[in-house]
Image (cartoon, rainbow, N blue to C red):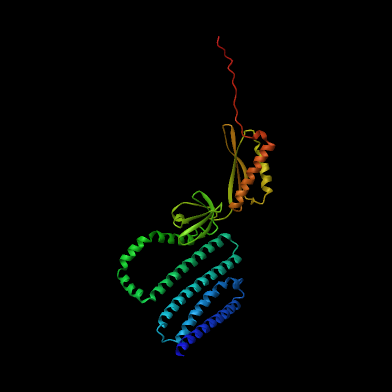
Length: 349
């Protein structure tokens, strides 16, 4: 009968702890939704926190239940140690989920109130990287806490502290590259050198900044490839940032034509093409002769657009339209090569 009581009593206590944790989780979630009901989309975005909250409450409840029901059992110390590990892990899980929720709600708030795209992209970069830094610190502290709960590890720590000088030198040499990338990532985020969604040219490839982490930067290339570069690349290598100050950008279209080209007609036709397309932002649209040597003249067209995507499409449209116009309306302007035939009238007698 006593053996049966040893099994039934802690089992009932554990089940009661789980039921209580589940009920308390529901109550806490309902209370949080009511308190933050004025925060847009809070209920949906905070849903990911319910599982870590339940985990924290379960481990607390089971520890309390077992400590109350069977504290003198020989296996209690081992079970209590496992429950402590689970509690620390669940607590860190809850902290990470809270950080993620705070990040999403903060970014949503700024997106609704900030119209400046440049400022919004800078805040997105800084908040995202800040959340990752804090998450890394929390995980590091949690792992250290888990290890320190083991008596053998605590005893080993005394010996490690005695040789901390040598270890720090070796560790510093071993992780020098990794640490430099971490510091470079923080520098990129908080010096505003690049931001999420910036348009850049790196390694001769055009793309947008997809992600900035503490050690690397992901660039989405125009053909959907992902170019992953270490953070130190952007602090040690020159690169082009097309949206550093503004997304507005200019571009050129060049054509080599014959000397008979009616520049005034081409200029008037360019104005009509630009006026008819929404790709043009109205800032710059001009046609100039930039070179006139040998048998050709070089026409350069400068146009502007609201961003690099629109500029690419606009340049292609202008190039195709001007080609079609020259081919149909001014065939004499097509590039051509000329040779002059000189007859030799001298005869040998």
